[in-house]
Length: 362
Ligand SMILES: Cc1cc2nc3c(=O)[nH]c(=O)nc-3n(C[C@H](O)[C@H](O)[C@H](O)COP(=O)(O)OP(=O)(O)OC[C@H]3O[C@@H](n4cnc5c(N)ncnc54)[C@H](O)[C@@H]3O)c2cc1C
Ligand code: SF4
Image (spheres, rainbow, N blue to C red):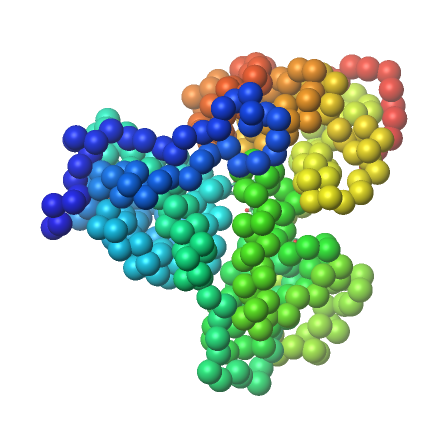
């Protein structure tokens, strides 16, 4: 094995620096700076190249993490990129938002032995951002296009990944989505401070450049029936995601100013993209100057509290029924929220909503 690896005993764990708390609360930009090359190489060299790599075992994509860490440590970035993208349709997105602390990093042998995980997510982001900068990421170029066509309903990550794989196999692809932009929750759910929108937009553009057709503002079930689409294509793939919020079944849940997370986050993301959003402009879905309480302890709750901070809420509290150790949200996101001034109230489960204003349900 190369003498560049197994450095975890000598080299401590480092993540790319975070922007200063005061500055990052003032905007919606991503909070982590990029690794510099030397740091990415150094951090990759901490990997112990396990015979049974638990990072890979616990990766839903079975990414070949040890090999691309080794290539990065050796300065062979283009090869590292090629390997990384061979199992992942959008590695630059996963490097940013995958819950690594529950998956690859949480199961890294170095982490388990108390040395601090190899910073896999940050290295993945570094490799792939470099690939985009260097022009190594190319659109699909087909030698032979097949006669058959596939219609894909939904332009979220599932639909986009399927579109890319099918296109690589030569099919004519049309992706239909009811929204005006492709990307699904990557655009309208996940806030910019975790995933800047230009990262998703350049990926979608690449797919378009590779010959995939997109039909936006097209809701299947309204603008066409499934049956009509089936007649147009040889096969249909449904990748429409999950949108029904879970109701909080408590007295007073019909009072005004109680909103499901997605309405709040979608409004915020649309504003960030420059759209006109009446309910935001009128103040209904804008946290500015308000005392905000978010119920729940998952990653969506963390996105809501941190969005509220950036919208300049007067105060932001997160109520969670268990304790910190048993939160479903990523520990990294909880730490970011705490740093940004969110107050967590553990072991608290609301019994009812109190108030007078039975105003609008939107
Ligand atoms: C607030 C929030 C934060 C998240 N943060 C993370 C994170 O940090 N890390 C992580 O790994 N995951 C995160 N997730 C989860 C991740 O976003 C989803 O798992 C992922 O987007 C699911 O992809 P999808 O393609 O199945 O669905 P979606 O992204 O929901 O895409 C489905 C698409 O189908 C379209 N559609 C639906 N019905 C129709 C129809 N009838 N006709 C036409 N089009 C239709 C929708 O408009 C949408 O564009 C988060 C989710 C949320 C809500
Ligand atoms: S589990 Fe950790 S040390 Fe082992 S191969 Fe994966 S990243 Fe390297």
